[in-house]
Length: 295
Image 1 (cartoon, helix red, strand yellow):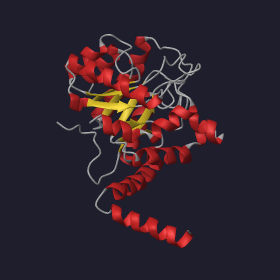
Image 2: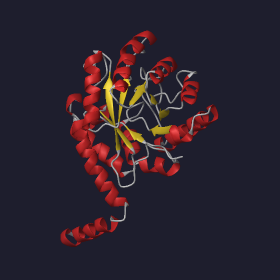
Image 3: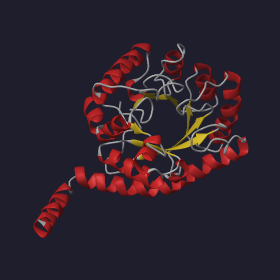
Image 4: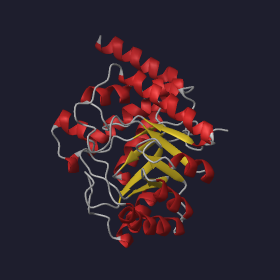
């Protein structure tokens, strides 16, 4: 069975909207700790084009510290319930099996775990028994320490090997293959050159695995390293990096500013369809003409 998160043929890439119900997230910490405000923002993202809203109650920014279970539950479960009641498809962004379980009971349809179901030993069971979709992300280290001198001998191969191992563990636990998404984990224990290589290498993951690939580049620190822009002013760079990922085969893009990024995603989706579909010859003709004109 094909995953529902595979990009539709000749269609737009899916959009996941980020809803951080935390006081300390790197981009919008403190903005949506109020339940009513969080639900309103989630529904606004849905109306702007988000196919799913990713609700998180524990920051995973570099250097962040773990949050107590009860605190995380208090932050996210009322928001999940409010969004689901209003007809929104919800993902729960957590590493804790109990948060996953309660969020799924409240109506969440996806688990998005930055530890790829490693952090909590019960996570595999919860996902397998619930039958929800799950996004497996690669992270070197833990959020608290992941940016302390990360190293790779070959980042694409190492991340691919990690995916192979986690997919095998999921399948053995009873998780349906069609439920699994893959996220290379931009910014999670990665150097600048690793992040760039992973974005350029999305096509390699699509080649190796018959699963949807999620790309999360929105406002990440590597953007600031390249352009010097502050976290609140990285939407242009987010759009460019996301577009490159889409051209490489990304199926779903995780973003903060849905209304703005939806425009860039629509354009990149159309161009990537042209580049790979039956009209690809148009692009080749245009390129040839450009060479003759400017060569």
